Image (tube, rainbow, N blue to C red):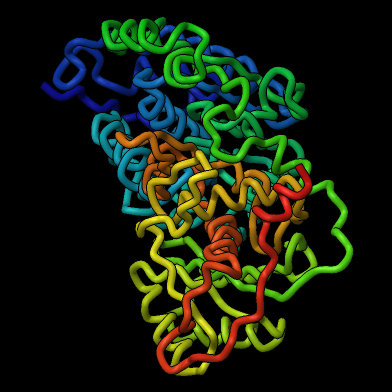
Length: 500
């Protein structure tokens, strides 16, 4: 049986403008239908709603709410309530919501909002589409709305235009740990209207121990500006306590696995990273070594949505002097043309190109352009077979990253790269690793990284490609119809061993 809609519903909802908890209890049919087994919010949800109501009474500064959590606590439901409360209790509210990935935003965050909107007593007052929630009143469609916006470092206007003088602004970041710092900075710069209710709420699993989301919590640079807390999955009735206990028994109470997935606590260190942060950080601080050698170029060809293609030139220990190029939205022909231009501009000896997927088209075009190019198969067998080298790699990509890791002990890298929305060290330390059945190192795949909301290491992959071959390993023929001699490149392994 549906709940009757009061004729003065607009006025009733407006009465909950400073009472989010009262709104949630009133606006949904608790104890009936889909909510038969539920009487209201969980304890942690109720606590935030009460705190939010208290904060609304003070317009002297923006309200900033930050929560980390383990898995399965009902975060998406809470985000939905927050949106529906914020939109329906204050006329001409504007807002924006984003998430770590477009897939997360569309299939989880927005899908949950659609579910709760269907249960909302005031759903007839609003229209919900695939990208926005707005007033059903034609006179307010453009002034009373919340937009679903996948973030993009190339297009930050949606976050820069958040002005609504004298009214209410609602900003929500879901799975905020992997939203680039640039989006945070643009958003923060836009929230400057005086006498305006500004609510900025950020949520997520604490998957990264650095970045703006981490800085919202105790010990972080901006912790004093945020109302922050961690939500333990064990304290929520919705979670599978048996599964949680098995995790604790298998990994340990204070393991990073349990800290992130159960306790909602940031990992202590990036122990699972293939490249330790200390090695990458030292490479940023290291001056460029004098001298140098011929230039080689690594090319990682983008093939997934927002992933760019990257052209990275390196000369010996110097990976700073020649700026990498990030190409967004380019086809194989344009990518090949840009690679050929870089090859000539840097007087490079050879280009190593990831030939997987669409990368094969780039390789073919470069051959037509008479560029010295070697196609590299990330999933192929390692080329190094040294009985004195006890490290075993499962495939070419792991091998190249292994060489990159050793090179970083003496090489120099930039702190930031144009077009990359976070420090380069974050990319280098992003991939984890495991051992296969042969005890060979297997680097974490880009697909697996996306599943745990970690950005793809496209720039780092391009730099790793510059270590595809040493001078002694170079194929006899660079590519079809190209038999010119290749200029020898710096061999990091020989130099490392000499230094040690």
